[in-house]
Length: 196
Image 1 (cartoon, one colour):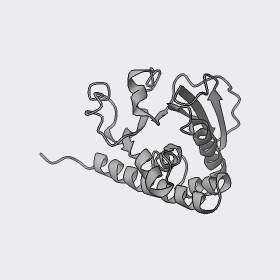
Image 2: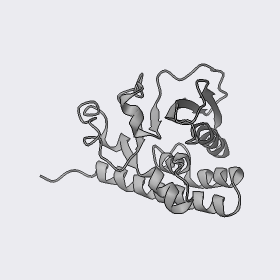
Image 3: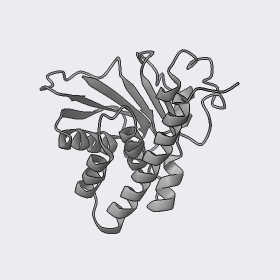
Image 4: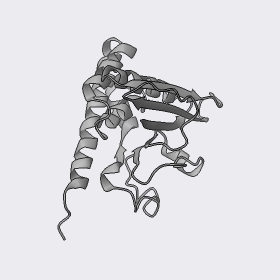
């Protein structure tokens, strides 16, 4: 089973992002489950949503305490919430930011993680560019498709088409595709041996 925890703020589409991730996983032939953590839903308040995917039926219902991947939609949460709680050392971290992990003050924390599991994508900027709204959830879904091959980009694009229509769907698909490319590039660079 692969478990994802998504951290964001009310109004950033955190729950929708988890739902679309589960649709994309389901389209790829997996069992999937998405659910929010019911806290305050007011705009700007920290929100958490979860997505589980597995090749067999999922019976668990409780919140995800030991995620395999963490998606952080709003980097200001890094200093407010224990976003990394329970994350395994071989886990993935995907953050919506233009900064590096070192620039965010996470250099020491992530030094034991695999380089190709530490990913950043300017999701808010991509959403503004393609959709005209600062909602990072869809670009992050595209970025997640590049991570570990759990869901395919095609499935993500299809899930976007189910959730949105017309120009909004097309813009979101373009944002997801660009985010996917950015992360694929990062992963490939991280896997290349560094030359001294």
